[in-house]
Image (tube, rainbow, N blue to C red):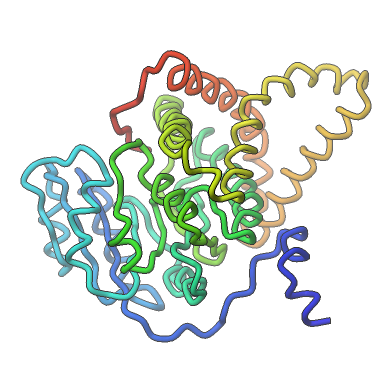
Length: 362
């Protein structure tokens, strides 16, 4: 019976997380924070890291030639500061500047506007006990959930990350080990490095690992709280970068992506889901009118899945009422996301108008 409940296929179908070794041997940890003009948030991030139940052995802040007091604030808090003389132009190169300075067993990347649950570091390193796991990402929850766009993103994270990344994790093929909070085996990260060839260095690196036959895991007990877009303008810029980066990554890895069947499946699923999403809005009026019974049932199942999943995790986070208030926002931005996905598809693959500039998410 015990073996039955530990079966990977069984747990995948139930959406249960993979069972990792509970006890983690003592290993040294460095937290790497790339930062550019982050004087408003960098102090909170550093103090939060120092107050973890498993505090890092070293914190390195890469000041990417900031024009504000980011570097001064970081240095005053006793972390190791690497100040670049010239702005690198991308998060990937800022992170690469620190890799040769890291001597610990594990490297954790954290954005300069992100704070962590007190047990986040303790939980995110557990899957790294498995020999095949190269990287682990955590559960993302918006730091602020006040505006329409922040509420919509809140549901996106509860449903999309918990369900989709949970399923992907049980196959060892997470599509992206999120840059806002991820852990790596340092030796493997240093060999691979962060690439500048797309606008999503975290997805690019994840796919490199998967194509090499490595595994990526998701730790839902490792919660991070980044600042998410509070307005449509910022939301549009961030999501546009995410979608266009996905198309860039498919193009970059097109010759090797089929080496990893798990990656091929999930990337193909994501692509088809995005391209076919307009069909749902075409048949939605027929669903309301009850003209197409099979389609009606499928849409109803999808709606219930979103609602039930979000409420389940909302109760766990003690945010049940916030979930109920946020659900209508999520269903509205599904239409916005459909537009942005197709817009990114046309600009990247049809018009060949490649995105080359980084837009922050706040």
